[in-house]
Image (cartoon, rainbow, N blue to C red):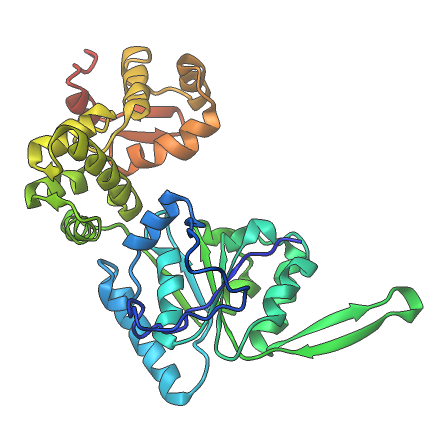
Length: 361
């Protein structure tokens, strides 16, 4: 049975208080024995950079203001927050919002993934363990099967579930009352959600791309958390090459930090940031090596297009799914290619970026 951990936030009002007594129901260990970390280093870094309060978040200010009103109203009434659906491209903060909201509400959080909920029995442990006003977060909720989705309907509306005991003529239905809770769903493909499920979310928020200024602010804040000195010009350069995405900005920052600690005595200047990002093939538009190979193939082999995706994929010896899902979205958003009925076409901006001459007509 798919089951994930329950995250207990014992004191969301002061998450950094060293004097707070931790809640521990497990066995007591010897204080003199070494205590190795139970999390990989990457997860610890992510936890260190992730905000714990809405006021600490950068960007998405319109979403934050609406959530503050909804949370404040729910707290005044003493009711659970309405169910929330976050949609948008990957890396824009959907999971961060899901972890911050319980802290603002002073409640607990359970986390699940839609891909792991293959049958109603996989959902039961989460629903039976919800406490009053707690939050259940389902990531990639568009991957929840129809049978599980229908099981959520009564849980979301009436806070109850029907459990069937036995089989055949001996079967009987048990109505199980749930504590009032908040369901938060996150999806990158809102269109794949059925209308009945989508309409059961009282609050629906779409997360948009970040501006360069917002990413610069984010990088400077996270640099302090990582205890590394980053000049503002360097932070702007990292932001420029991060595709308007906070997750990528944090990834770039981690790499630049490593580079600076080995090659530049731990100080990130503009030159250090450029050298570090150039080393991993990230150019000034945020394109990586595969992005440029796509554009170079389209221009050099197919004279800028139009060309079909399969032809480009076979020429590059890359899966067409990889190109369509990973490479093309950013190239389209950056206006470097266009998709037509006849195929993909490179734009003048692509020729200019690669310093290549367009074919003569």
